[in-house]
Picture 1 (cartoon, rainbow, N blue to C red):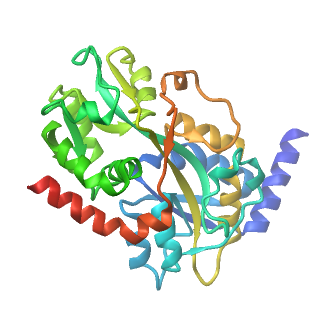
Picture 2 (picture 1 turned 180 degrees about the vertical axis):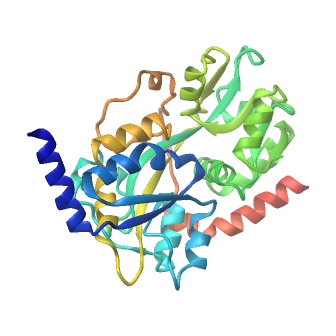
Length: 321
C-alpha cells in the first residue's frame, strides 16, 4: 500500500512540474548537490536538478543576461547578491519554507531577491605543532615575520578576508595591511593553494575558515591543525540562493528554493558544505571544534558593492610595494 501511495505522489508531482530540468549554478564546493540531493528531489517532485559549478557567479550571470541558462544560483554573498540585484539578474521570491529560518538577522534582503541557506565565519587556521603559543589578535599576527599565508583579494577567500579587516579597522584598514605585510610569507591565488602550502608547513598560519576545523576532525588532525578568531572580532558571512531573472520562471525552480530551507538540505549544508545551517537542525558532533566569535563585525552588502573594486585595487597596490 505504501508503494502505491509513493507511486501516486511521484506521478502527481511529475504531472505538476512536467518533468522539468532545473539548472543550478553554484561554486565547485557544492557539487554534492548533484550527488546527494538531485535524485531524492526528483523522486519527491519529479523535477530534475542539473548542477553546474561556476567560478564567478555574477560575471557569468551578466554574460548570459539576455539568454539565461541557469534557473537558480547558489552561493551568493551579501555583496554578490546586491550586485546581482542591481544588475537585474535575480528575481523576487520568498520561499514557502521561509519561516524555518531561525534568526531574523539571517535575512539577506527584505525584498527576497536572495534567500539565505547557510553561514560561516572566517578564521585563522594554524599548525599547533609549529605554533605552541598562537597569537590572539591581528595585532600579534602583524608582529610575526613571514608566518602568514593570505589569498589574493581577487579570489573569494581573499576578498572576504579583506572585508573582514575593513570591518575591524574601518578607515584605518590600509594602515593595518601595511603593518601586516612583513608577517605575510606569500599571497596565493586561491584558498586551495594557500591550504596546500599550509599543510606542507611552509607557514604556520593562513587566512581561512572556522569550519575548516570540521575537516581537521574528520581527518584525525584536530590536535595538529586548529583555528582561532582574533579578539578584534569575527567576520560572519552568509550564503544565499536566488531565482535567475528570466521571461518564464519554472515551477520546479521555486520548488527547489522552497527545498533549500527544508531539513534534508539544511542538514547536508553542515555535513557537505561545512557551514552552519540557517534553520534549527542538529549539527554533527565535529562542530564542537569550530570556534565561534565572541564579537561579530560586518559590512553591509551595499557598502561592499559601492567600494569593492576600489578596495581590491588599493590592497593589491599595498601588497605589490
